[in-house]
Amino acid sequence: MCEISGFNILSPELHLIIILMKYTIFNEKHKAAGAKMVEFAGFEMPVEYSGVTNEHINVREKVGLFDVSHMGEFWIKGDMARDLVQKITSNDVDKLEPGKIQYSCFPNGKGGIVDDLLVYKYEKNKYLLVVNASNMEKDWAWVKECNTMNAEIENASDDISQVAVQGPMAVNLLQKLTDTDLSNIPYYSFKTAKLGGIDEVIISNTGYTGAGGFELYFYSSEGNAIWDKIMEAGKEFGILPAGLASRDTLRLEMGFCLYGNEINDTTSPLEAGLGWITKFTENNNFIDKEFLLKQKEAGLKRKLVGFEMIDRGIPRQHYTVVNAANEEIGEVTSGTMSPMLKKGIGMAYVKSEYALTGREIFISVRNKDLKAQIVKLPFYKAV
Amino acid sequence: MNFPQNLKYTKDHEWLKIDGDSAFIGITEFAVSELGDIVFIEIETQGETLAQGDTFGSVEAVKTVSDLFMPVGGEILEVNPTLEDTPELVNSSPYDEGWLVKIKIENSDELNGLLSADDYKSIVG
Image (cartoon, chains in turn blue, green):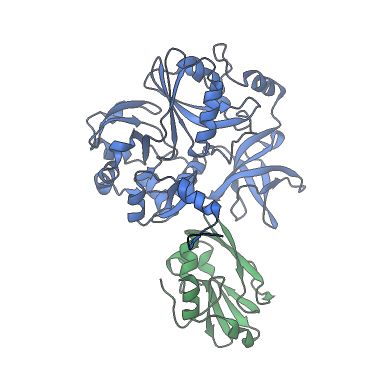
């Protein structure tokens, strides 16, 4: 505590948090809707509104609206744009056509991952990289450091807002708000068009839920009205706002990686099951290519797997995985009670010899070893 | 928020409803609102006699695991059988259908240390 002019100031750390807390343009909407707010990646974000299970099921069966404005966006432009993107991302950007999107990661030069991201190709010399909010500053420093070829780069994270409209009803809902035929935007493709009265919205057929739907990007200065427009248009489809908690349970049911859980600065994309976005083609000279190629040839020591609980219980991050002889064979990276499957599901790194579908493993849930079984991903398949 | 007058409370956000020499135990509406959706309840102490403050089980929400403590010592007579398949009853009806266990109170003197509805309300309010 310190005292200035008779006013008690809270601890300096708390003072700093108040100054640095960031708000998305929809902050007031969340509070008005009764959301429980939490700090996430420096932003005050809604963790849930009506309850995580309700929101989760509503996205699977109808449609949900997520504020994901905290995500980071970088433009890479100019003659050197392709060379920079190819160098810093593990996927092969030469395979990407204009109007298409690629899932990729930034290898960190030490065999780990700086972040995972989406790469949007506008045209030959113009790309948009969408990165995790929690890594945005680290990513931006990394992109600058790697930009030895002097591509034009711009961090637009503060200017761009984003919502995700996810669920089987998302396409019908959004079609009410735009003249662009959304059925002409296939999965992992995008168009820029007027939507909900805003010009130049990036309409992207992507998401982190496996429920179908779109992610929309627009300039923050123009975007405030879009929340109410989507909620209004979605009424007939049973739309509900959905928070970060259901975003996490939805992605986990699909077996999607979350940075900080499944992947981090020490996990290799190959170990994480991201070999499909790690392309060793001749034209793709990316950071860590040699290292990862050697790792692939030598064989992986550990692999990321999905597992379902056989015994009743819920796995959690950092719980130990053991074999029948009670020897440690790995660690849980994410776990939850699946709202759709109504059982405990999780992902874990295990020694490669155990990474076989159907293999029985045990999860040390606090004081007990509970039986689980390795399964194929995704955990949940929409019918 | 609801704080029924006929219940006793603990600072661990549990309630106790006295019924002769036995009592029902549950968690409060405040606890439920803090935890969010409850997805799993594990109570494997039926038939055991536990002391005040001992752990008798755990309640798991989507993001957290919390231990359940004995508000007073006693024998676990019964575990709410409906919670195995419908733990969400604790969210929808924390003071009624969402009760957790029924115990036989061992020493009624321990009841004196519990909080009244108004005391508890002032703690969480």
